[in-house]
Length: 349
Ligand SMILES: NC(=O)c1ccc[n+]([C@@H]2O[C@H](COP(=O)([O-])OP(=O)(O)OC[C@H]3O[C@@H](n4cnc5c(N)ncnc54)[C@H](OP(=O)(O)O)[C@@H]3O)[C@@H](O)[C@H]2O)c1
Image (cartoon, rainbow, N blue to C red):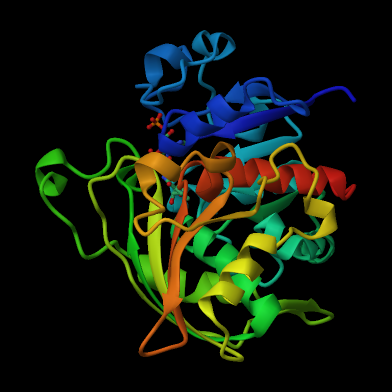
């Protein structure tokens, strides 16, 4: 098939750079445009962007001139949005109305009833909400969202447990990487030798977004999963990779070995298994006492796999374990690209 032209909105930031890197040599998508704020518009990408990834900036991107974030300025069928939420709220519907599929990382539309909040390996069927969205809003394009990067790995692990045993409650604590705060993000003097025990708005997201993704899609839309979640979110001095430690109460009591086996065996729904960005495996369960660790394990499955470890009994609830997910790959740019692949594969573009 010929490649589909795509654009990256907010291409110079932490997530935008990941998009540029992951879309280099993508089998289905070809980058036709990159956008930024007024600070960057009109400049070549290499000049506007302070590249912080270890992979080199792709050659094709270097001379691409940064465009404004408006549909008239670019020719694309899919638009990957790495815009700040306030900007996304204004701009994303304009693209959807103009007939483009917006795959967004921003939180602006995640809670809208007709907007899919997607992790294809968890709730691929929710992509069907796009039909309702187009009908109700009169758009020929659409908006799809991925969850915040802390909910991502946690929700994948919870889904495997929910399917196998049922799920009642989860108490979770995050240790979140610096790249999750964007670029330049948290000042170095605030974070070196430190842990910051507050990330604005994050706890509310982690307590709500998994319930939408683990909920079921019916004629009335998504019924939120009946799970109670309590989250503490913290920023730590790690570059990439969010750790979430979780204690859970399941529908039935099972041994740590049974829970670990269910997570290791978990498979994505069939429509999301064989896409270019499908995580392989969906969950990697590690047996060592001191894993997963961000530096050692975040690139498992090209950064798309959720890594779980330390599955053990919990004296308060049933089980406790650790999850790790790459925040700018599975939790952001890679996740959006996976969503776009699902949309194309379902004939919804
Ligand atoms: N970082 C993560 O791990 C992560 C994970 C999941 C979701 N998200 C979400 O993804 C989005 C991007 O996050 P980030 O971490 O990449 O932020 P970031 O590093 O601050 O990058 C923001 C990007 O948006 C552009 N921008 C800012 N204001 C704009 C405007 N008025 N018009 C057009 N472009 C504008 C910036 O362009 P200039 O450089 O030209 O100013 C930059 O490219 C946010 O909504 C965030 O919540 C982030």
